[in-house]
Every structure is written in C-alpha cells, then in structure tokens.
Image (cartoon, rainbow, N blue to C red):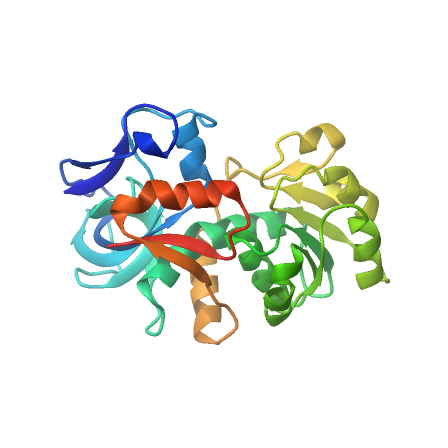
Length: 297
C-alpha cells in the first residue's frame, strides 16, 4: 500500500511516499480503507524531533474510512461500515488499523469525519480536567483551531458560557460557535474581564502561548487552569493534560451525536492529497489555521 513515511527527522522534505505492507488487525482492532486523515500538531512535532519517534514512521492518528477487515473480539461493526477513529497504525496510508471508533453520520463528509477525532478527544479531556459544566464560565485560549473550536462547541453544549481568545479575523466564526470572542496580546486579561464581568471560573489553554500566568490571574486559582500545550504549566500550579492520564474516546460518539443534532460542526480549512502532506504540515506549523487540515485519499 502507499504511505507517507519519514526515516529521519527534519523538515517537510524528509517525508517520502513509499510502498509498505498492509497492516492486519489484531484482537480488538478493525482495518479501514482510509478516505481521509487529519493533520495534527503532533505530526510535525514527531517529524521535527520535538517528540521521540521510532523510525521509520508513518504518521497520522485520525482516520475515517470503510471497514474492510474485522479483528478477533470485535463486535458491533462489520465490513462495509463507515467509521472514524483513532489509528493504531499510521493514518497517512491507504489502510490503517483503528483501536477506537464510532460510526460516521450520514451527512458528514470524509474530511469532517477525520477532522473530528483527536480534536474532540483532546478538547473533552481539557474540559473535564477543570470541570466545565452547565453554568460554568470558561475562557478558552487558542479557540479557533481544530481543538479550540471543538472545545468551544463542547463547552457550549454542556451549558457553559465561553469566552474565546483568538485573532480578530476569527471573531465572527467564534460567535457562530456560541462564544464571546476577545483578542489575544497585550491587555487580553482586561478584555476577558470586560466580556465576563461576573468572573471566570476556569480556563483552558489550547495554544500554549505563555498565557498561563494571565489565566491564573483571571480564575484566581492555578488548579482551575489546564493546558494541552504548555508543559511548564505545572510549575505554576496549573494542570496539563497529554492523554497519559487516560483517553476519552467516548467523546467521538458525543461529538457525532451533536453533529446529527446540528449542534457541532467540523470546519475544514483545506484538504490535500497524500503527496502534499509536507505542505499541509508546514502550514499547520506556521499557525493561524482555522479548523482542520486534512489529507484526502
């Protein structure tokens, strides 16, 4: 099968399209013919050497496709079903194994299905880490990207009031998602206070843009602040969630249910063929992507 692989760490140019053996599902796994795979920040960080990787590596964790083989011990899914889920093998390939999955809603496109996976799982972990629930007022920093927009929508669906920090060009978009937007940069904390005069209960940092001290100031409690990207946050008493404490793959079903109710959307900024994976990763690495970038097969 065709796959995008790198055998040394570096820039986008290290990615090669290669022929490799098709994976076979083990116990509790299914194999899908991949139709779309989302591009996440972790993908370029593995390639750059920011994260430790076993080489050669076929990246990609989010896949959507059609089931073509079912492993032992698997029930509730059959060959021919459309699914989205977490890839146990690299998703930037024609076939991938999934270890956690749910069905694709009838009106959801393949890029939307792939773009939902890691974003909603990560967002759910972050919201749960600080107890976002009905009546909570939460500020979300870095709210317009894939994870950020998922966090905004999931928080709104829980009944929370959301103040969303992002660039001015994304403010109308965040209003559509149900949030009150404010701009990042100097004076951000004052703008958040003005947007939520009754106060901020908890804060979620998606961007990792060195705002943890400001978020602690806003909430008044370091334990009410969580980041998915600033791993120095615990030094200030705030929390970090990286998935090592346990994953929340039940979030996939929650998000697809909300999608079917018209209460959740997955915005795709651009799709790319497999051969342009390096270009997609470079664009994501530059920042300022709204929604998701997706490889489409």
